[in-house]
Image (cartoon, rainbow, N blue to C red):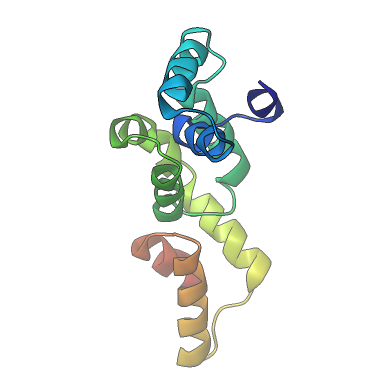
Length: 133
C-alpha cells in the first residue's frame, strides 16, 4: 500500500518491486488485480501523469520508449499517441531554445544540435524544423 500511496506505478513496476521484496508472484498478481478493480492501480492515469511531467522535455520517440520500458502495452500507447504527439514542435523548440538558443554557424554545431535533439527523442522532421528555424 505504501508504494501505491507514494506515486502512480505501472503493473510491471509494482510486480518487480514486490517480487524483489520476497512476495510470491502469484500473490502479487492477485493483489494487483484487486488494486486495478479498486482503481488504486490505473495505467491510463499513470500515462496521463507521466506525460504531464515529461512532455515538455522529451520527444515522442523517447516518451514511447519510456512507456514501453515501464510495461505499458502497445495498444494503450497507441490510444494515447495523439496526446503524445500534440505539442511535439513546441516541446522541441523549448528544449532547443533552452540548450542552444542560436542557429548553428557551421556543420559541427549543426551536428551537435541534431544529436542532442535526437537524444531527447524528437523526430527528424521536427529537429530539422527547429534547428533550421
